[in-house]
Image (cartoon, rainbow, N blue to C red; front, side):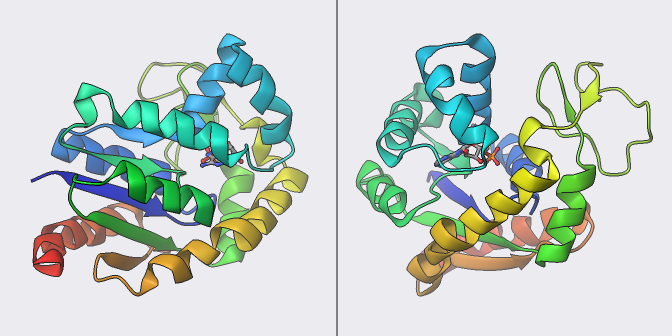
Length: 217
Ligand code: AMP
């Protein structure tokens, strides 16, 4: 059976890190729309050129563009056995489009990472990512540390500056948090406490995935 997962939660909740681990454990791709957009910006493609100012302002790229990107990505052969979506859907319209993409692909497991907003602000203010490959550094990485994946320099993400973080959290509340109400009534919606050490969060998510069969049968 395929494993179709959406990681839901505010910026800084740990979606990227956890999605990476979950995807690796199950041999399915992590599909991060933020990573896809950042890659396009770095390469200077038409998509990157269109998205850059929107991302730098902490706003959302248009639904049609995002739905097109995800539809194309989920059609790739490596996503046939499932996927872990990180950063998509971010609006109710994107969630509805995702439903149509998933026709015949089995249930969607929605994992919500809950983290209080003061903790999100603290995490995003201190987050470092690799300037070369984009991997998140471990929160406890000492000053001067290099990227654990490729040895690149660790930098602050452009949109992790204080004013943009405030806007991203506002946008989450206004446009993405309604998705919690959208999914909450389903048996395959599982909230997880994201305000604990990353290994404990990973364990809770692992349990949620293991129980998913029971939830859907
Ligand atoms: P993330 O890495 O998920 O925090 O995404 C970084 C930025 O990319 C967001 O602040 C948005 O500007 C844009 N973005 C990523 N995913 C989406 C999406 N599903 N819909 C709209 N904009 C997105």
